Amino acid sequence: MRTVKHRRTTPPAPDAGFTLVETIVSIGIIGVVMAGLGTFFVSSMRTTNNQTGTQAAVQVAGDAMERVRSLTPSLLTKGRGQAASTAQWNSPVTGVAPWLAGMQMAFDSGAAAGDGASAAVPTSPLTVTLAGVPFKQNYYIGRCWQPAVTGGDCTQAKPANAVEFWRVVIGVTWPDNGCKTGTCSYVTTTLISNAEREPRFDTNDQATPPVIVPPGDQTDDIDSTVSFQLVANGGTAPLNWTTAQGLPTTMSMNTSGLITGRTPATPGSHSITVTVQDDYDLTNTATFTWIVNARPTMNAPAAQRSMEGKAITAVQLSASGGTGPFTWSATGLPPGVSLNTGTGQITGTPTDDGPYRVTGTVRSKNGNTSSASWDWNVRPALTITNFAITAGQRSTNRNTTVDLQLAASGGSGTGYRWSATNLPSWLTLTSAGKLSGKAPNAASTTSNIKITVTDSESWTTETVTFSWRVP
Image (cartoon, rainbow, N blue to C red):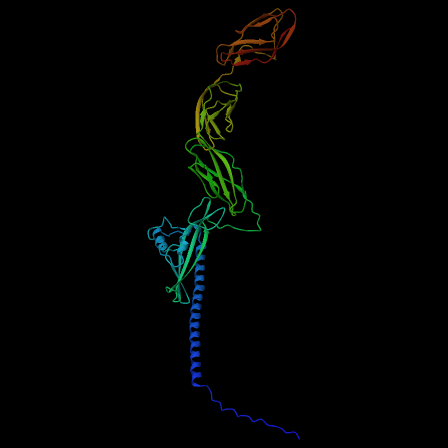
């Protein structure tokens, strides 16, 4: 028979709970933990407040930058007087001083003493309140230069071939016990080109520079009003004419390429180079010469002699100096004679004899005039007075003697000289006008005879061609 053995067990002791020592230790641990949590909470709240203030300061600084960028660069310092700028420069807010060391202070030299607080970019801080916290915007403006080729930092030193910039420093401050001095600060800066426009970039546009239409050499009289428009094609509008090197000081060119003013008071030649720039800052240049002449001087022609009814040899008027095209005029010309106002040439056939006093005037391109006078003597027509030809022939009977003294009138009235061509062999004519001879005993005819008389001034006249018949 199997025997089963039973183990005797000891009943558990009743629950006694935490001892006093354990309780005290536990309370101590809890206190330490709670103290640590309190410090962590305070630190966390301080950090959160600082972050919130900084984020607001960033927004305030961004608004200040937008204010600056909305202005034309030339207006950044407008109204910021030197004294106000210097006072601000010498007491910068925290974090600004290192930036000021790298640039030259900029101010408006034309501002009145004490100006600055009311400028578009003021020298006094502007207050912006966010969530009940006052944030102050402080604006500092200076100049700095960056090497054009190598680039790099923009500094207050000005190297050769440097690019100039405005540097704007914005310092924002606000009250906060979390910062050491009880005031926190945030600083940001930007560089702004001192050009009136910022560069434009468009990768889809194939930009080409403008092309200046060759202006050609210009010519004017001294001390004359000028108005000359330069023209350029192509490029990207708007086009801006920037320089006119060599232009006389009495003349100027505006940005649209219009040259105005007056020419210098002394003659000379001026080489001028002009530059045009388009909206992509692409440029083109052209060079031309501006010649300045003395005012015109009318050259009086020699005294003129003409004969009534005989076409004159053309008389060409001329002038010294001045700038063409010229316009010509004349008064006192003999009747039948006229002047070409464009060329200055006088032509025609006088219809009335007599002495005339003629005055000619030249007018230059610029409206300057000059006049000169000369004598014009028109002689009466030179004619043979006693040798009438009937039906184109003259007849003499056989064995008839011819003895005729020819006479003339007009011309100079003196010194008449006579000549003849193709006279028949039996007839002669002396230079004094004696026509003589005896007709032959046989019938004959001589044709194409011409008798000419010349006066003392070498004016000549001729009879009509005729024939002499011996019946």
